[in-house]
Image 1 (cartoon, helix red, strand yellow):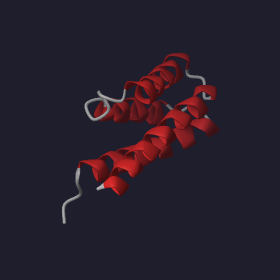
Image 2 (tube, helix red, strand yellow):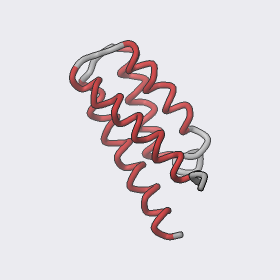
Image 3 (tube, one colour):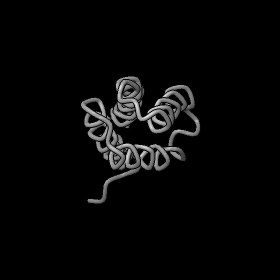
Length: 93
């Protein structure tokens, strides 16, 4: 069975979460670029849920621009909020 849109979004969020966990330990250009790419991938799905997504996007952009791993924790909090939202939608189905 092919995963549905919610499952694909959860997979992307899980990958993003792993990248952010790595960035919490230390800045890595590879993980930062991948995190930015994952956020771009999520943009279309979360266009109707702007608050947590905007916070995530801003935190990741700040992380990339400053190369400061301290922003990874904030981004991770927003990603976790989005995962909870997606899981709640799956449970509703």
